Length: 463
Image 1 (cartoon, helix red, strand yellow):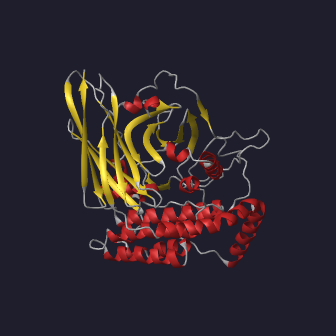
Image 2 (cartoon, one colour):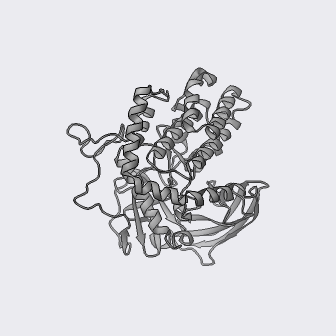
Image 3 (tube, helix red, strand yellow):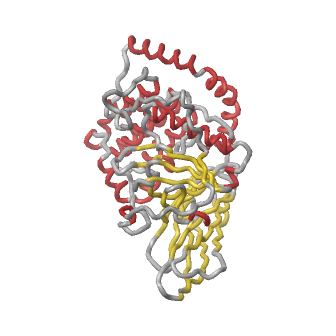
C-alpha cells in the first residue's frame, strides 16, 4: 500500500485493516462519504495465470444479480488496477463480521437465528441463479448497523483457485456456522442450541430450504420465541468505529492527487445491452418506483423477495405455485444453458478440491515472526510492520491481535487458512505524530488456535 497510503480511486483508507486468504481488507470511506471497503489482493494470488480475469468475471456476475433485485450480498463498486496492485472496492462496509462480534461477546439467540435465516435465504437465491458462494464462514458474514446479515467475498475464493464449489459446500459451511453458534448457547440457552444443531444436521442431509424452514417453525425454542435483529444491530454499531477521529467521515474529500495510472477492470456494457432496471425491496436506485421497467421475476429474485417479505417465516408453496416455479426454472435453465454446461464440466474438479480441503489436518500454528523496517520514521509518518504466521497446512481460522506500547489500542483480526498454503502475512499500519523521539514497539499475539504465541518488533520515531 506504499503507493496509496491515503486512498485509491477516490476511496479514502482508514487504519482498520485485517487479512484474509485473498489479501488485505481495509475499512474505507467512499467518495460520497459513506462507509465502504477496499481489498488489496495479495500479489502472489492475483498475479497467478487467469486469476485476475476470473475475479473480474465473478464480480460482474454479482453486479448483475444485485441489479436484478437480489439482496443479501455486499455490493462491489469497482475492481481497479494501479500498477501491479489490484483493488476491489465495495459500495458498503465489510465490517464488523460475525467473527468480529463473536470475538467480543456471544451473539444473542434471536440474533443468531436471524443470521442463519438470512444467510440461508441468500444462499438459496444464489443457487437458484446458478452460482454458489464457496466460502461461507463467520469472516464472510457481514453484520450491518441495522443487524442484517450480508455475505461478502462471494465466489472470490473459487476464482483464485480456478474451481466452482458445489452447493453442498455452501450447505456444509452454513451448517458449520450453525454449530458454532449453537456451541455458544449450550449453557445459557440449551433449547436454542438444540435447534441450531438440528438445523445444521438438516442442512447437511436435506438441504438449506428445510433447515431454514425449521428455524421458523420451531422458533418457540428461542427465548421469547423471537427471531430478531435488534441486539445484533446494537452489537454491530458498537464494533463499527473506524480507527480515526470521529470527525473523519465529515471532512470534505481531499484535493485530487496523482495516484498514477488507475484503470477499472470491469467491462462497460454495450450501449445496445443496458442492464435490467429491476430493483428489489430496499435496494432502490435510479428509476425505481413509478415508471420503472420490470421484467419477469427470476427464481432467485422470488426466493429473496419471499424471504424478506416473510419476516423470517417460511411459507410452503402450493402445488400450483410449485408448477409455476418449475416452469420458470425450466425457462431459466434454457436461457443459461452455456453457464450450466460450464458448471457441470468443472463440478468434478470442485468436488475433488472440496474433499482435499476437508481432509486437511487440524489447524496448528508452528511459528510467528514480526519484522519492522529499520529506517527511522519521520514527523507524521506511517510505517507498516509485518507479522508472518506459519501453520501446519490445516484449514480453519486464526485469530490474532496487535498491541502498541505507545497507546492502549488493540487491533484485532482474523484470517482463514487453506490446505495449500502454510505462510500468512499479517501487517500492521502505524501512524505517529507529534514532536518527540521514541522507541515504538508492536507486539503480535496469536490467540487461537492455542497455545498462544507472541512476537514483537521495534522502530524509532524521531520528529
